[in-house]
Every structure is written in structure tokens, then in C-alpha cells.
Length: 137
Image 1 (cartoon, one colour):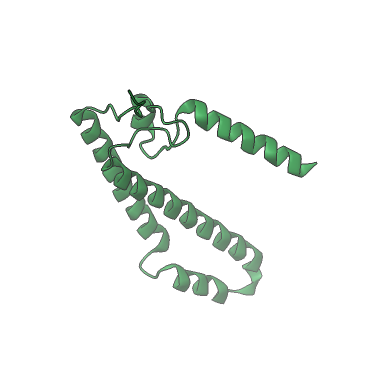
Image 2: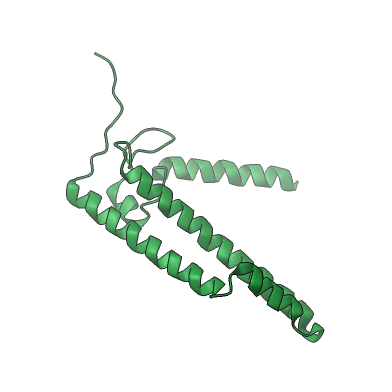
């Protein structure tokens, strides 16, 4: 008998709950992005910031950097949500991409876009942290 990978054990109700949460998060992030960029868009906003008085140039540059970083974070979160919505349609949604085990429903409910079980996520973070420490020496 061949070994089979664990299958997604989500009930239809759990699946619907996660899909609803992801769609709400997607809508919220899209609204947030529109608010951040305003009707002008990112390029026009940056141009306006550059044209303002030179007196507050440093403050404006800092504000501009913060605005751009915030919109980049929102775009990244939106990308993760969109990818999670695509994965949700696949039979292996809810399985850890590292070990193949089922990700706990409570973890998925809290963050439906996660890719790893807690154990594998902790190992990844630990290895990234120790790698960063080695580079800083």
C-alpha cells in the first residue's frame, strides 16, 4: 500500500468561513490601498510631495517614504490574500508547504493566508534569525 499525503480536512462550513474572511480582508485591503493612494495615484502623490516648499523638504521626504512603505505593505498583504483565495480552491489548501501536515484550523481561521504549520514556521523563523545573526558578525 502506498503512503498518501494527508488531505485537507476542512468541512464545507470551515471552507466557507475562510473564504468569507479572505474576501472581506481582500475588500478591506483594496479600500485601504485606494485611500492611501487617493484619487491621484502614487506617481501624482509623489510629484506633489516633491513640488512642496523646500523648507520642510526633509519632513516631506520622510512622509513620502512612509507613505510608499505603507502602500507597499498593503500591496504585499493583498497579494498574499489573493494567492490564498486561489489556494483555497485547491484540494491541498490547509496543508503545510514544508512538511505536508494539516495546518490547524484555528491557525487558518486567524490567518487564512499562512503556508506553514506552526512548527515549520517556527523552524523557518529560527533559521532566518540565526542566518541574520551570522551575517551581522
